[in-house]
Length: 360
Image 1 (cartoon, rainbow, N blue to C red):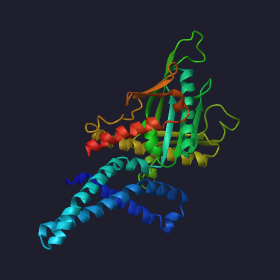
Image 2 (spheres, rainbow, N blue to C red; image 1 turned 180 degrees about the horizontal axis):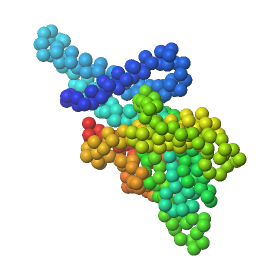
Image 3 (cartoon, helix red, strand yellow; image 1 turned 180 degrees about the vertical axis):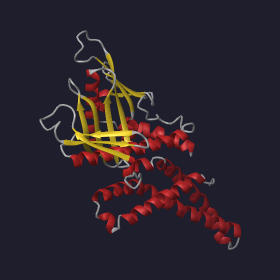
């Protein structure tokens, strides 16, 4: 058996320690009283359990291999030496195969452990048709959430003038939600004949999608002193209280300049809670992007940077196909619009896993 990759073993040791820490937290009365935290920790535990279990099996095999090699090296009891020589190849083969499988799962373990994301969809170029297209994408992700049994909560919604959405922000929670939705960030193009087109000409419209992993409060600490808070009246169309009652919350993160405005709810408290939730996700994403930039040269071949200016997918109505430009593959249009993204996302995960393994 070849010597295992030291970086791989170090990463596995870190994850095993994290798993043990999660198990301890789940037995802590101070933690179990917080149902939201228990939910998040349980999702993480479920995501890591199989990986840690296999790693423990590997360490047991590695220990047996070391013992067999020592028996052979000592050259003592002839029968024991012969038995060790017979069993060693099988043990080494099992350990090598198990480690290969573990390595494949390792590179996506952190992704699977994130159980909550912020999903943002904005209408891009194309006028009213772009808003309709953004609305179609919203429905696609809502259908996916139903299939995956995720919790989908709309935090902010700005409708288009002729239907669809100009901008929508949602919180999506559930097992594997980041691993599945994390590949959706970028520009989604559609080529079709808009309902408003009288000449039957095909137009190209776009919508941008951003998916941000939602950090726990313990992962990112934003001091109150770093945030300017303004409470104002809501803006835009609505009832008689829209412009009279101060319920809209506007947060500005001073160190980064990131701004969040939340006015969807009539409750100032709920708007404040959602605004902080979105601000934490955006600040966390900002810091993660800075870290990623430092490793950009090493990761240049990875699937997409997730940048909003990057075109990742084109939906072609006439041919009834969807082209994912990162995979250079086609998928059935109606399947994706119905929320059946399994084949597409699985292909992206496989390609991503291969690239990450190559960089270990």
